[in-house]
Length: 276
Image (cartoon, rainbow, N blue to C red; front, side):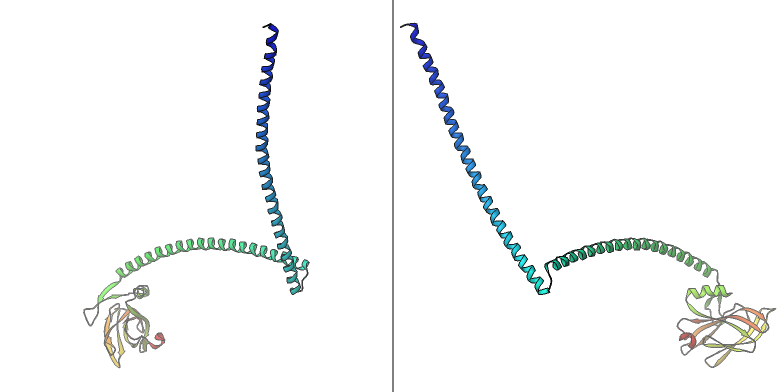
């Protein structure tokens, strides 16, 4: 065999290889083209479905708008209003709603401010109450101290011990104590004067020796308290169910004038003018 016979075979093999590659490429292209066509077909189907759905929705929207327009026109006819007038009313309604919302918001803010103000005032009131409690506690302490300073003396009818007020200020302390009722008086000699539910009459007064004589009228009876000292509790019983009363003369101003007070039980009758 000669050397010139081998080259054609080499070219024939290369050609076959090229043909094989071209064939495979063509098959790959066909497969890829088929796959791509399938995907495009699927996308086109979905697009068609979406388009049909949009058309359907557009038709429904158009029908709804048509019905709304008809309803609006019928409502306008029934109310005697044009479309423009109804739109104007709708705008007015929206404006009123917005105004109402703004008004409500303003009222809520005002209410919040008032609540804050009330809370502040309440805090101030609590502070004032605390101050009042402190003052009341001090007043009670002062009252107890004043009561402790009052003179305690035995009456002329029994061993009953009484707190005696020697002046108007001490009498006010006794009144605040609240155990009995007190009636202040000033007597002139020879004058029978109602005091509480009894009457008193000055018979004699001796400012030099600080002594006096007076008569107590109670239950249609007269009780003479003769030659007594100032700030001495003069006791007597009065009433259907006898209760203990006391007369205390605090001062002898002259031979014709004295002053003091009557002490009566809390449960005893009170003068008509006071009881009314």
